Length: 83
Image 1 (cartoon, rainbow, N blue to C red):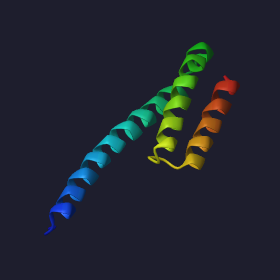
Image 2 (image 1 turned 90 degrees about the horizontal axis):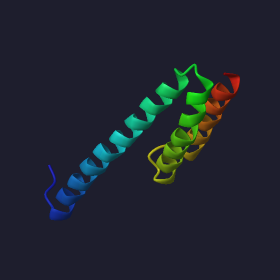
Image 3 (image 1 turned 135 degrees about the vertical axis):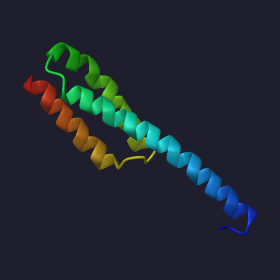
Image 4 (image 1 turned 180 degrees about the vertical axis):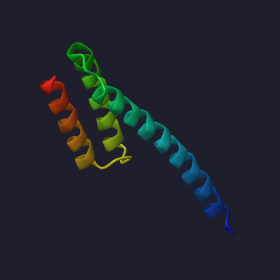
């Protein structure tokens, strides 16, 4: 266990950030899954910009790597185009 006040504060901050990051990462994964399971092109076209924006925000705040965000965006764009 931490002995210094600054280390205890760091532990609190890390835990708060971890929970925050997990929430947004999980929300985005659920949105990706919903988009991939969509068979209706109109619905997929409506979801695509929202999911892309979510991925960009996660990459911007380093919750996921920028290349992973780019790969996921490319993958969902291909899926929507194939519908």
